[in-house]
Image 1 (cartoon, rainbow, N blue to C red):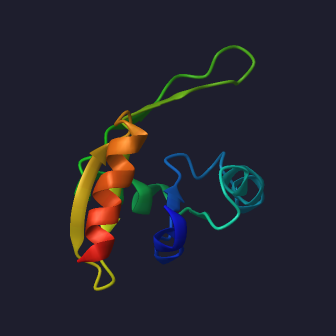
Image 2 (cartoon, one colour; image 1 turned 90 degrees about the vertical axis):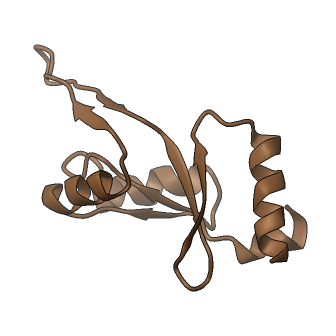
Length: 108
C-alpha cells in the first residue's frame, strides 16, 4: 500500500478472550505486522460486538485433553477517520481486490 498504508490501522479482535490473553495477543498479532493491534474484551462484550457486526462464531466442545477450536466467519471492516463503516470485505477476499478497495477509500 506504500505511503497510503501508513494511514491504515489494523485491529484483530479475538472471539475467545479466555484463551487469547493480553500476553498471547501481544505475541500473536505483531507476527502479521508490527503495527497491528490486538483487542479483547469480556465474553459478553465480544458476543455483543460479534452480534452487532453479524460475525458468526461458536466455541466447540473441548476434546479429552481440553483442546478446542473456534468456528468463525472472518471479515474485514474498514472505517473512515470519523468512525463510519465504509467497507466490508469477506476474510477470503482476494488480497489484490482488498488493496484496491482500500486505496480507493484512502483517496476519498
